[in-house]
Length: 259
Length: 344
Image 1 (tube, rainbow over the protein chains, first blue to last red):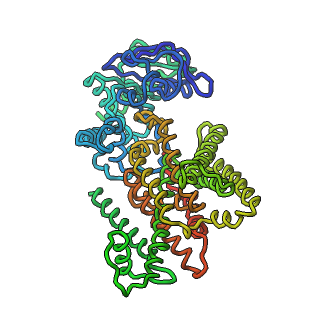
Image 2: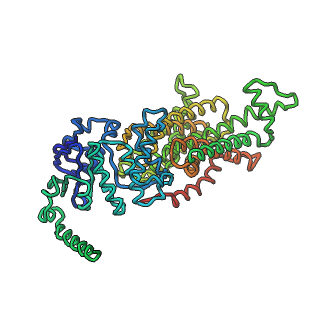
Image 3: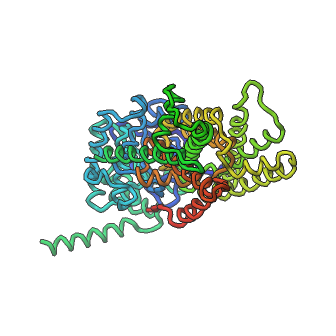
């Protein structure tokens, strides 16, 4: 579905990403991990053609930079990190904006029954149906994140790109969201790429992982084959696996107390 | 339920506008009652007979002076409010307007040069002035955008406003020079710059109305794009908006509306800032309703400001720009310090 060949990208003439190549087939999800500033978000932006890049990015064989925005939108949707809200809309209106490309052909861009049904489905899926009439500037960070996820889903893309999609969510909503996206990619034969800081959450979403460091890919593959103490030490500069094993031991103690 | 409430509010706003227009047409040194007003308009529009008891002077005052003036104020208010709404959504900036971004100043300079030189564009006739206003307004706002991008790649709100202010001041200085060096047109230019609807006739009103209504209709085609753009450029690109093209079209339409309005009636500030905020406060942010609501609010505000300007110190008349500034400046300060911005 998605193929990157020797992709480099950056800002103001400075490359943040260098020589990234990989393929993502349909029905799969991929987590991108790495330390701060390693180029994770830049990679997402390059895939969505939000920034210029060198090398080839193809979607179902089509070069992404040769496509118009209106042709990219039905295929790729990006859920970016939440920024400032200057003009508050209701939750329903915000999610409906995800239908932009679908509504363009209707009379004066008015939503059709199909659009309304799609939005209601997304509101229910992301557990925000009950707050659909609230203004978005009155919501908590977690609620707002679910609103933007619903907007992304309403776009009905074939590839969803998520930039730290769970950082404002409580644990329940984090797990529900990732398991929904995992199922979505498998059932619909679509794909998801997510940027994460938390390795546990990345494992929850994806079949495969990619680690970046200093703008370069350090490894990509199945978590079982990729992750070991030495590799994580190389990526993050500390004994991450040791820390996680310690945490696991503590959880085991809690379990014993509970039993 | 929400839509019904919004429809009801919109209907109330439309009724309010009609009331304001009737008051503006009826109140002045000579009072004209509602019944007489309806008779006079009926006779002019539908050719119905006027009663003999009706003073012909009243007919002239209403049809030749009050009505074109009140309608011109309303249409110009609507035009500026719509232009402000567009600028605010395109730049994601509640403080942006054609006035703060220099469109008004540029349009004024263009119009002043036309007045001073007496040049008209062949074949365009009465459209020469609005076209010049539009071109100069557009050139100024693109200058502001270019400078802002050069100073700040991220085009932060404050940078755009500051650059807009600086370029506005510079263009206004050029306008002052043109005014000062033109002895013959000095008085005409000074009064025109203060903003007034006193000289508006039906033909000018027709031009402003045609341009404004056409632009509003055109803008209604872009309401979804404006909604999405308020969430940021990346969001808009991801949703499929051709951002550069859309931005250019929206800014050009905004400059056309403002340029036309300013070229005919001079610089009248703050309505383009206040009306969109009122509309958003009452109707939410969806541009499908904010654009027409801002037009009605701006129209009503400008008509009221014009009514105040010509009646408060009657028989003397205040420049309407001064009235809108007296109301608008504290409002601008309120928005700047209390703006509803949520950063998560």
